[in-house]
Image (cartoon, rainbow, N blue to C red; front, side, top):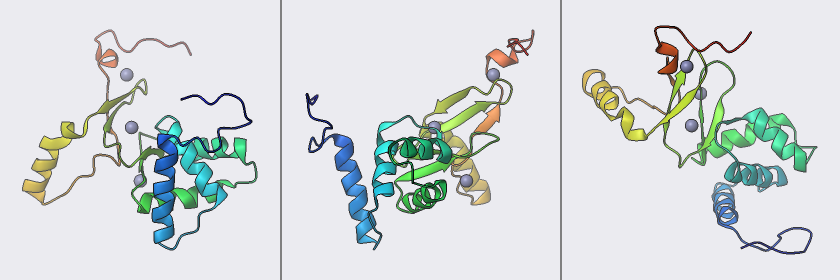
Length: 164
Ligand SMILES: [Zn+2]
Ligand SMILES: [Zn+2]
Ligand SMILES: [Zn+2]
């Protein structure tokens, strides 16, 4: 449903609005305050791409509300992580990226070209059961990427030359 006319689509409830309201309800249930920054951060999280850093998310929020500070975004991301709404993942060097908590895939990252392949959660089942059986260890495949080399970068003639 597209809304025609009117300055904004106020009042037109979309699926992401419902998710935002349900998260805000759990924030309230835990005694948290529903702030403008928190609501904006949630709307940015629910509609954009996955794999965004806190700084990416902050600049999207700041495009709407320039006075929201990066530290506020970090604090809100921490709280949303405690609620299970988001999780962060380290895809290699550099800052963590954020996903919705409902998204359970893992990551295979090429150390040569930096390409990233999303791996379904069950991809890690054999590793998880070995770790549990032999070490009593519960792995969290969402937190860190598995690093290595993609198929293209393993070719005998070396990785594709990309200038430089
Ligand atoms: Zn991912
Ligand atoms: Zn590669
Ligand atoms: Zn971490």
